[in-house]
Amino acid sequence: MILLAIYGLHRYTLVYLYFKYRKNYNPNPPQHFAELPRVTIQLPMYNEQFVIDRLIESVCAIDYPRDRLEIQVLDDSTDETEQVATEIVARYAALGHPIVYIHRTNRHGFKAGALDEGLLVAKGEFVAIFDADFVPPPDWLMRVIHHFAEPGIGMVQTRWTHLNRDYSMLTQIEAILLDGHFVLEHGARSRAGDFFNFNGTAGMWCRQAITDAGGWQHDTLTEDTDLSYRSQLAGWKFKYLPDIECPAELPIEMTAFKTQQARWAKGLIQCSKKCLPLIWKSHIPRKQKIEAIYHLTANLSYPLMVVMTALIVPVTIIKSLQGWFQMLIIDLPLFTASTLSIATFYLVSQRVLFPKTWMKTFLYLPGLMALGIGLTVTNTKAVMEALFGIQSAFARTPKYSIQKKGETSAAAKKYRKRLNVIPWIELALGSFFAWAIYYNLVRGNFFTPPFLLIFVGGYWYTGLMSLLQGRFDRWRTGTANTDESSPKPFPVGV
Image (cartoon, rainbow, N blue to C red; front, side, top):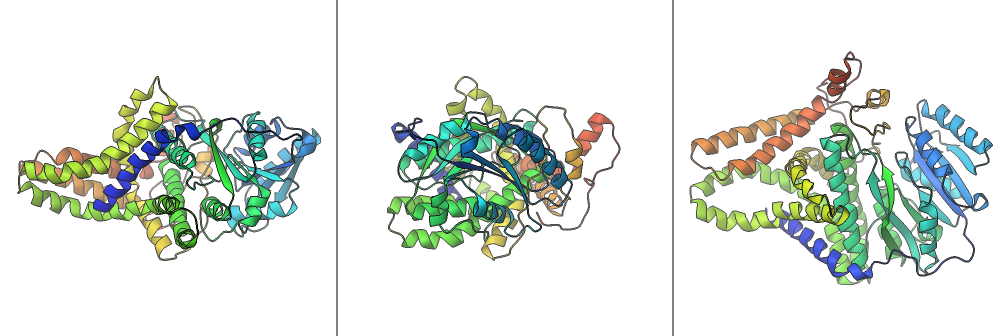
C-alpha cells in the first residue's frame, strides 16, 4: 500500500510540474524551413480492412507539396485487407498521389519490423507515422514540420483526440484516461525537460534521430517508447504539441481495451528492463533519471494492487477491531496519496481541456476508479510475463470504424477477441468483495463497505463486459448468435 501511495503521490508531482513550467511551452516553431524538406508518411497496418479507406483518404488530403511527399502503406495483413488495400492504393496513385504499397509475407518484428523495412526504401528526411484508426487533419503536416527547423529536434508528438468518445460509458472513460496521459504526463515531462515518449502514431521523426538511436527494434511490445529513450539518450530533443490534435478511434469492447492495456503494460516493463540500466549509467541529470524510473515502472502498481486486494479484507477486519479513529489515522493519508491523487489527476486534465464542461467528469470518476481496479488481473499477468521474460506476439487492437451510439459493424464480429479464463477470475474477485461488504456490515463496520464497492463494481464490470461483448449488439439489433463472443472456457493469450 505504501508503494502504491508513492506512485500516487507522483501524480501530484506531475500536476505541479505541468503548471510550474507552463511558460516553457511555445506552440509556435522558433524558425521555419526556407524550403520544405522531403517527408515520408508511414501507415503500418495489420488486418485493418474496415478503416484503411478512411485513413488513406485523410492522408492523401494532407496539405503538402506532392513532389516533397511520399506515402508508404506498410501492410502485414493476412486476410482480405491485402486486396482491399491494394485496390485503394492503386486508386489514389492513379489520381496522382505519391503513395506506394509494401506488403510483407511475414510479421517479423511486427510493427517495428514493418516500419524498419519501410525506412530502408523511404526517401524522406522526416518520417510521420499514423496507425490505421487515425484521421490526421489536412493541416497536420504543415503545422508540425517547421518545428524540426529548430536544431536538435528528433521527434514531435501531437495529441490524440477521440472520434467515438461518446459511443459508450467505456469509451468516455477511455478518453479521460488518455487525456490524463496526453495533457499532464506528456505536458509535465516535456515542459520540465524530462524524457517522454513517442506514442507510436500521430507523431513525426527526424530520420537521423532514428538512425542514431540504433533504429527500430522489436524486443519489446512498445517499440515506440524503446526508441524514444534510446534517441533521447543519444542527444536528440523531443517536442510535444498538445494544440495540434489528431483524432482516432477508441476500442469499443472490453476485451479489445484490455488487450491494448496489457500490451502497453507489458511493453513498458520490458522497456524498463532494457533502458533503465542505460539511463542510470548515462550523464543526464538525476531528476531525469528519477522521472524515467517512475514512467517506465508505473505498471508495477498492478501486481501491487493484486497484493493489496489479497490483504485488504483481513487488514480491514483487524483495523476495525481497533476503532474508527485508529483506522482514519492510517487510511486517510493513504487514501489521499493513492485514490484521491488519481481523481485529482484526471479532473485537472479535463479542467485543462474542457474548462466549461469539466465538472461532468465527476459523473465518470466512480467508473474510472472501478475500471482501474478491474484491469488489475489482466495487467498483472502482462507485467509478470515481462518480468520473467515471457515473450508474446504483438496483439493488435481491433478497429471497427464505429463512431456513433447504436452503430454496429461486421468488423466487430470478424475481429472480436476470444475469451479466456480471466473474466471468470474477475467475477470471482467481485463476488469475494461483495461477501466482504456483507461481512463488514454484519460486524457493524460501516466505514469500509463504500470503499469495497469500487472493487465489486470494477471486477464485475470488466468481467461481465468481457463475457457479454457482442450480446448487446444482438439485443439491440435482434441478430442471431453468429459471432465468437460466447464464453469459451479455455485460456488464450491476452
